[in-house]
Image (cartoon, rainbow, N blue to C red; front, side, top):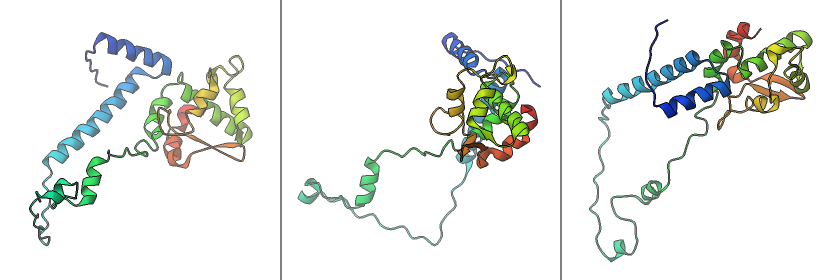
Length: 204
């Protein structure tokens, strides 16, 4: 492992320390995730900058008709050379892709796996324990296991319901979807199942 240090403004550093305390995340794991994300963006940007557009030899450019400057144009009629649907699309704001973070737990599971004090780690540990003990896991059983600091300290999660609900969907500021509920039983979401199985030993 190579050690890298960098400086942050005091206010930003204080907020970072507070966020680590609240989330229970590991400092090195967070830094590694940030560097990987940065490398992906930077390398993709560099690749796009040096990419040469491919020519289209069989496409003949359409001539642009001159812009009208008469009373019809001044009266709000569409301007020649710019189709009406293009004018409308220029006025509409760009749509945000709702699915941009679909399956984001895939990138967080390795970090949760290496941090036993993190709440997501504890909930997953409790789930796998119950899976071994009783087979099908209900929400009540998982809640009881995560709400027993004396009997099961390694899986005790304060405010369990809030933390668990953040693991049932992907959008917004959720932790990332991991669980689904079917007929009263909790199951692992198929989208992240393979990743979770690779790290399962960390949660047992």
